[in-house]
Length: 169
Image (cartoon, one colour):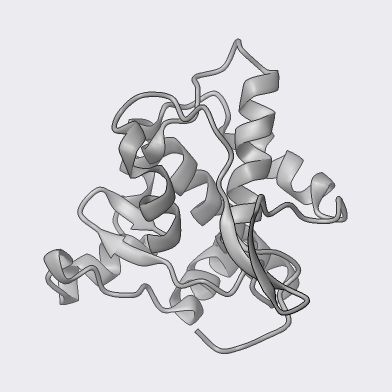
């Protein structure tokens, strides 16, 4: 991905969605599939709206849809169960390394709330199916690459497809 000043990280966005899901027990919980797709949709709509990435991590085309590899590594042990802990990262703090729980500064709450409100009622399988529709970035990449290789979905492709969605509304 092109390096740019990003307002967040994929893990901080994931943690925001996890905390939101725990505060709303009447919606389907965030399992891996749902969480990965929420983070993907947040990146896609941010790119289309603000012409810059929300986070710098690559999104890869995996067999069940778009995934940020770091999120998979962090949450894979949950399997199909709801995720019950926040993600952590090892970061350098003043020359020392420590495990931190990434969060953003709150400036993205309004944007993330809109994404949440649009997708919260769906289970992960429904969100995954939406990423597989004809003309979606994952589907385009899947026609050209072996998904066992988990190719990166070009950020420009995501932006172009989601900008077209905005233009068509």
